[in-house]
Length: 163
Image 1 (cartoon, rainbow, N blue to C red):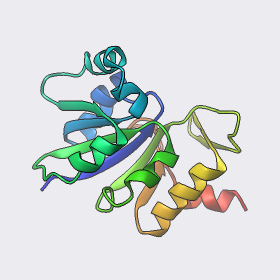
Image 2 (image 1 turned 135 degrees about the vertical axis):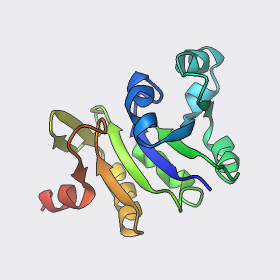
Image 3 (image 1 turned 90 degrees about the vertical axis):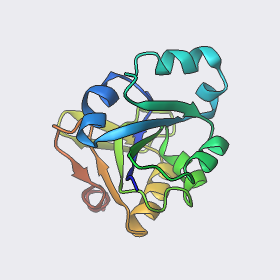
């Protein structure tokens, strides 16, 4: 049985995923989960057109993901969501995931937290923090890391720096 890794990246599927993360995590399948992109054929095609054929790749809705993630796989999967708050909708399906890697979260009007890790900056809303903290408290490893060669910042380090 393969492992499941979760990445939060508001760009969803892009070159950094294929060039760095898929090799680092020994991924055979990429699952982008975003309702808007999955329901727009042109966006979906643009998102997946540069993915090498060696990877099984799909862009699906949250509801489709609930079914897809129940299926056994022999290779490792990289599940990518645009926003941390969407994790809540897939809590049951992601229970056995290895870790959540926060890779790119752009600033939004409701962002309250700026997290620096090396040369990267991530922005989180209160809801994002609440959801990610609930996964961390349930035993999931949560880290901030743009690429495998960059320094990682732990969830615990972020939470401790808030106080």
